Image 1 (cartoon, one colour):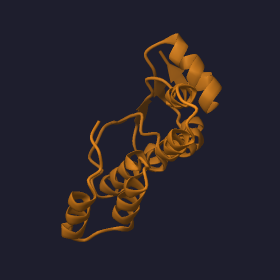
Image 2: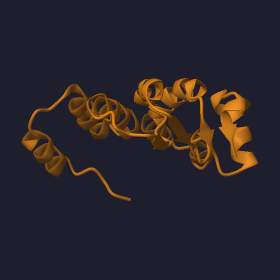
Image 3: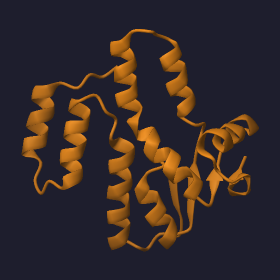
Length: 149
């Protein structure tokens, strides 16, 4: 497991030119134990595709970020969901009763709130199994008609 090293992270952050709000969000979220990459990736991808519209298809691999909703409006779009990450979160919570660990897991998995909002809005989802499809329907409240196994 790669740990966040504050001095290196701070140095990289300070050296970055033309920082955007997402860069600040990402730095401070990681600093406090979050996993901001799905959210920031989606926003960056949406911004990039606003300027570069010569793509036939956009495929996202499970970021389920707000940016994907915007991208879906402008491009043929497919979301790949291997399984709902809510499963991982539940298993991790069940593995320990230690409060510090449980708080750290709550913080790290905070991106699930976004994914639960975004997933039902996605029109084309691909998943590898019927079991995953059922989990996506149950956990993310997606329409079965939008999911292909």
